[in-house]
Image (spheres, rainbow, N blue to C red):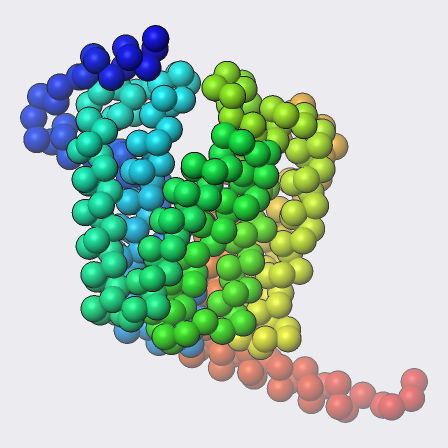
Amino acid sequence: MQETTWTETPRHHQNLWQVMQSYWQLTKPRIIVLLLITTAGSMWIAAQGKVDPVLLLVTLVGGALAAASANVINCLYDRDIDYEMERTRHRPLPSGRIQPLHALLFAIALATISFSLLAVFANLLSACLAMSGIVTYVLVYTHWLKRHSTQNIVIGGAAGAIPPLVGWAAVTGDLSWAAWVFFAIVFFWTPPHFWALAMMIEKDYAKVGVPMLPCVAGRETTAKQIWIYTLLMLPITLLLVYPLHVMGLFYAIVAVGLGALFLAKAWALLSDPMDQQAARSLFKYSILYLMLLSAGMAIDSLPFTQTLNSTIAEGLNTVISSLPISL
């Protein structure tokens, strides 16, 4: 059996640096960066552009450790299918560079430190939310949905949408409607993002029996679903402007501009679902989209930008009020 092969042929590290590299790789750091960007964006909105630097640092570190713990457990659970795919075969667990027990202990340590940091230096709500992200990602997505449902990404996407809640709770100690809107933005962003990736590596998923939508329903259906979720996501981004009024003109312009390009790329894929380049372009842009949207939130929440927004709004009101009633 192949599973026996990879468990009985461990590769040994030559030095401490290689050990550190393997454990670092196990946490999937590139995924964590995107989660931290949404956390920071949420904190900036909640603090109206005046975030305590210490709280920001602690929350980002705590959030990074929680996400790292979830990713390590995911790698531990999926090490069998990771071995089957050439793209993931050389990861630390399937290659034998790290043993499963050591990975589990590492994940537990990361989660413990994360909870302690957030509970002590932020608040208990943010700590519990971070832990709920781990549970959702591991139990709901990795264990329950990933290998059994084409809706794995849709429902499991809730785990990736929790970081904005952590950031908001760390600042305010509660969760407002604005926090849940940010949650919804990431939730509806997730299917287009991951299904575009699934279309790029469709053969890998099919090889190991993971029922990603392109493998089961086909590329045309997947492209249609991406289009639908994109259409749903874009108006949600504007709820922060109206009716919630937590974002202003700058963010509105950023959200509309970024959303229009997202829609254009989703339409290009819908027009030709077999185009791998269109899928790749959408996947790469989806990452940039969430980063820039979060940056737009942070910039819009700054006092200077808020003052500028107010000045522009007052100017528009003056112009409108000076117009003749009848034309």
